Image 1 (cartoon, rainbow, N blue to C red):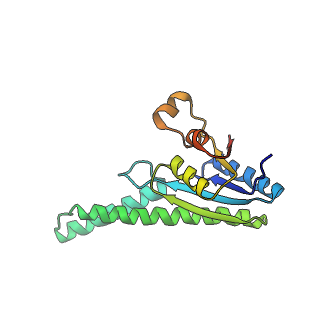
Image 2: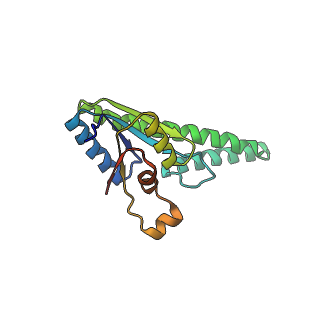
Image 3: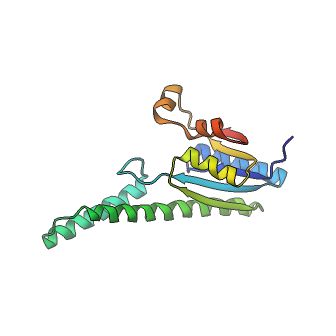
Length: 174
């Protein structure tokens, strides 16, 4: 039997990943393992896949920029969009880091050694696998999003990718 010393939890605030974290915390307490809580964020591309808080923030920024431009009789140049995407990236980064800090604090309160990390760029499955290999993780705990075969074909599935490519054991929690 392989000793489990490091558990990686792929966390995305969905109910399944919360259950994966709870399971990993209990396992880590039982075997004395440390936990890595990670989330993977792709670079923002237009408005695809952003959460409601970020969407509201972006709409507010766009509204302010449009109002200010109108008042000043200015035509908004394309560079403004680059600045807005940079600001959006910073806003999301802060949100993700805060979320992981809060989650990590709960695990630390259980007396565990916990590290959290937001992985930026790249596809989430690939980022999780690379991080797990680099840190020599013994177990990856990840939530299942219960997608069927057809949905997985069109939408992809991080948990499916991780199962197929992990160098270590993977625990998929429903």
